[in-house]
Image (cartoon, rainbow, N blue to C red):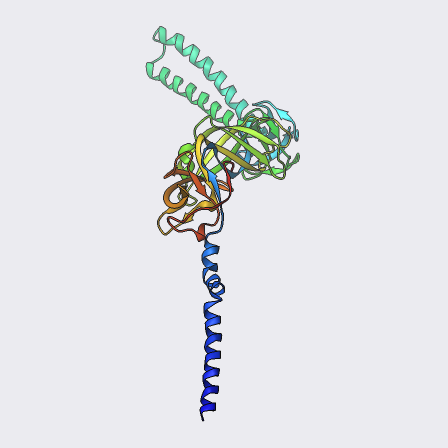
Length: 356
C-alpha cells in the first residue's frame, strides 16, 4: 500500500514539473502571440512636409463648334424656279441673287401700274395749273392727289411681291449643297441650300451652375477636337445670363481665335477652362484624408506623436487635395498607416518627403 502511494506521488510531481516548465519557462512565446497585433499597429509610416504649391483650378466640359452666322435658304412664296446661282462651297457677297422664281405676271402688273402713274402725274400737273387760276375746284384737285398716291402705293406693293420671288444672300458667306434644280416648283417650306460665314466660328458649351460666376466676358478657353490633342483657343463672348432649370448648367458662347481646316461647324470639342490659379495652395495626397460622418480629418506629427486634426478641404485633382483650413506650412502630414494610429501614438517613419 505504501509502495502504491509513493508511485502516485511521483507521477503527480512529474506532471507538476511539466506544467511549471510549460508555463514558467516559455512566457515569451505566449507573450509574443498576444503582442503581435500591437506590433503590427506600430508599423513605420510615410509622411509629407506641407509646403505651398501651385494649384490650377481647371474643369473639362464638352462643346460644339457653330458657324458664326448660318441660315437655311428658303423662298418666301411658292413658285417655279427660273434661275439658280448657288455655287456649292463657294463664297458669295451679301445681296447676291441666288434663286429667282417666275414673276412675269407680277412684272406685267407692275408695268400697267407704272403706265397709270405716268398718266395720273400728267393730270395732276394740269390740274395744278388750273387750280392757280380757279379753273378747278379744290375737291377735284384733292381727289387727283389721292388717286396719284394710291397708284404709287400699289406700285410699292407690287415691287415687294416681285422681291419675294428672289432669294438674296443675307450676308457674306459660303454656300452649302444645292437641293433644287431649274424648273422645280418650290414652296416656302422647301430647303434651297445653306449659307455660313467664312473663317468665323463660335464655340458653344455649358458649365455646371457652381462655376457660373467664374465665367467672364473675354475669358480665354482652350479646346481640342475629337481624337486630336492639338489645342485651339477661343474667347468668351457672352453667357445665357440664366441657369437652365433642367440641366442646372450655364450656356456659354465663345469666339474661336484659331484658324484651321479641322474647325468645322457642328464638330464635337473638349473644352478646358482654367478658372483660377493659386501659388500658395496647401496640397496633400488624397490618401491622407480620413473621412468622418460630418467632417474630414488628417494626422499631423507633433513631437514624434500622432495628432488628429479636423480640416476643411478645397479643390481636388487626380491625386491631391487642397486644405483650406486646419494646417499650416511646415506641418508633417502622415500619409500611410492611418488605420494603425491612435491619438498620441508614437511615430516611426519609413520615409519623409516634401514632394507630392
